[in-house]
Image 1 (cartoon, one colour):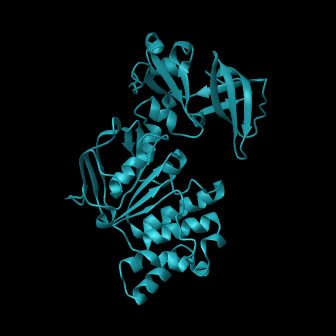
Image 2: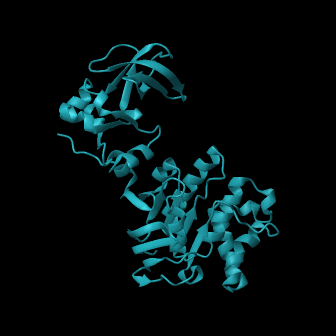
Length: 349
């Protein structure tokens, strides 16, 4: 297990600065995720940690040892990409054995390591197959196994589940979490999928334009977003953002902030914290239903209120249809308040 430290790390491509000075500590044995939209710099950070890219400034340390100029081989890291990158002419056994042969291990040691890795990943029955004979999920397991078989100091994963369908993504998420708990290898993960990040990570760094907007546990980032970008990016369904200037009659808003200041604020509320009923409720917003979205166990309802969209979750058994009036109840404690000019979270009264 290896601790990683990034100290004032920068990356420029010609005149374009992808990463301003970045300072970050990743604990030994941690499952750490870089999350953010395309182009925010998360894969660049992973390549810098791997030694594929060299920083334009700053330093990288593994367990306190400076590795800034060392290549990937010398750093003893293993990387799994979005593409499986398997050798098509080799069997699963040969793909798993390849990195160990490069290390010139004896045949008996290679066979033992391959068998153990195949057992961990449920690949034992597939060892004599070639990649073309495998499903997408099986190929991804082989790619993971080829990285894990040599027991690296650091395990790096760059959008490894993006090519899988929804069901396989869920299965592989569970597999990754189990493997990390079992092996304890320091793992750095990159994804644009916030649900994936919340499900897998010990901590998350949410990036925008190369800068960390917030770093913390999944629960901290979800429940205590530092700014409007974080609040809007994290959560499914995404947070509803209301213009404070149009919310002067909203009881929850009046309880949280001075009504005279509402015009300077954005008010955020997660749809999961909004209860929707077909009948009037105390302090509820009456809104015209635009859309009802059944998802099996839940019914999400989208309404129009004060020329804004609001979304919430209907109580079990409620019959709510587009065109009718529904009532959206918001608890003051669930309301998030942001400054319009800076986007930063505002402490309520």
